[in-house]
Image (cartoon, rainbow, N blue to C red):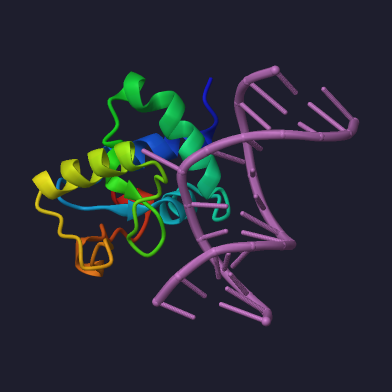
Amino acid sequence: MPSEFTQKVIRIIQNIPRGKVIPYGVVAMLAGSPKAARQVVMILNSSTQKFQLPWYRVVGAGGKIAFKDLRPYNEQKSLLTAEGVVFDDSDRIADSFFWKIASIESI
DNA sequence: AACCTGACTTCGG
DNA sequence: TCCGAAGCCAGGT
């Protein structure tokens, strides 16, 4: 039985609109644990397949892709670009592409 | 129980 | 603006 935090994280990620992104920290905050950004990462690793989560719409604070390795880095970038997300000269995503959600109650 | 780990975040130099 | 260190959380060993 998944923790409530895990269930919320999954629900939030499943609802990220196409062409939008959201930072790990924000997901953690909305799910009720502001400092559990790293936990969001673990959930993505363990539940992406099972729940068909749009993992690539979750990015690091400041709109930067978190992957260090070039391979997955480019994969995520291309998937987002395909949805219309634009990267600036520093490979960061503009704030206008961030999914703005007041609370988890709205979904 | 101790220790390590990660697609993180924040803060200070 | 760019690192590096420190803080943080929960699952795995």
